Amino acid sequence: MRTFRNPVLPGFYPDPSAIRVGEDYYLVTSSFEFYPGVPVFHSRDLVHWRQLGHVLDRPSQLNLDGILPSRGIWAPTLRYHQGLFYMITTFVDNHKQPHNFYVTTADPAGDWSDPVWLEDAPGIDPSLFFDKDGKVYYTGNRVPPGGQDYPKHMDIWLQEIDLAQGRLTGPKHSLWQGALKTAHAQEGPHLYSIGGWYYLLIAEGGTGHTHAVTVARSRNVTGPYEGHRANPILTHRHLGREYPIVNTGHGELVETQHGQWWMLCLASRTCGGYYRNLGRETFLAPVKWEDEWPVVNPGKGVLELEGPAPDLPVTQWPLLPVRDDFADGELSPAWNFLRTPRGEFWSLSEHPGHLRLRLKPEVLAETGNPAYIGRRQQHLSFRAAAEMRFQPEAAGESAGLALIQNADNHFRYERVAEDGRQLLKLTVRSRGAEQLLASAPYPLDTVQLKVEARGQDYSFYYRASGSDTWTALHEQADGRVLSTDWAGGFTGAYIGMYASAGGAQSSNVADYGWFSYEELE
Image (spheres, rainbow, N blue to C red):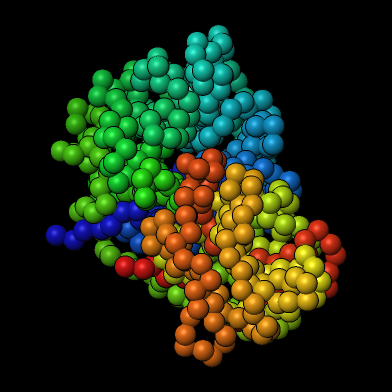
């Protein structure tokens, strides 16, 4: 029996939404303040996914200027109809106000349209449903029309949408308010037509430990909807905080070309206690139907780290290389910026075979667009390294590696100039307070920097280019500062390359010859 390993998308890939088009599967996830927005993936077997790119990869599509951590793009939904792909999502501003829009394309690996913004579309987590009679419906959540009976009490609602005109039309219909009156944060609605029923799959209980997937059904698209007596159909809140997979929820149902059903959902792996550095990841579970209701992972009812694989031809894509030599002329889709990149601060052509970062005034502790290019931490234990050529020319100039959870919680491993000396410095910023963990003189222009994490022990090393020996700058720093449980928010840890002029203008640059990332056993 073939098996697969969960998560199928490790690292910060939350709120998965997936579809099948023929024998191909496509998936998108949330991206929050990171740019480009909404990574899009392709699979043939639901287990192995390759990233095609991003849906929102032009500033005209996504302006993240000044967006606070964990605002930005929330919970996209992907759908396909008559040759066109639709991605609908919420942009959450710094006042926590939602703005819902959709974009379209005929090729998910190509360019997507500019956004169509929807008026009078309250709430978050929009979804589209194409009914058999040709009508198209929008679903989302909102404050109940009669008011909230308890905190975070939400109403799942539906309205017809005119995609040709880009507007909602007709009356709004309240569909369901969740499985239990005490269930809060009803959100993430996905609507399906299966076997004469309309099924409404939603997330409840908040995206933390009490997260859950629940389901209701109706013979009519506008209701009334009856909740399943076995709700929630998936949750881990009853398993306690020592189970290795927690905060399970936000599901999406997918039927294979052979009539089998699967659910993609989010969950997190804990490390060193109840700490979730990797954020919310994408998991896969089998689904069977009993008495016209879905049963997730029958006989077990929970997500597992390993399980029987889908009955689909195995299609493995080439893995991302451990080492990126920046020789392809364009950035790998694994790389992200913090917010929409402004200014020509990076280049792959000015120093061929290198990633050049121009020092910007912005620093990581602000909510601007610093000269930072990072990738997700995807494993509980990993090794990352880079070779950098950089000569600081003034006080405040720095470049190196940065491991971030958000503006107030990160590590900076930098080369700086202080009092006429060239130094390597390791600084941790924890809930806004900074502490120098270690420093060492380093007079050479080129340095190789390395980070090794084994669980929550993060260790930092350096060596000269061409040397075989690593020198420890600081070992076993407490990595819990990179967890959402310490830092708050909805994202996962990133590691990447960073250059700053510390608030000043500078013409200085840092050149990175390569960057490597790999899992540690």
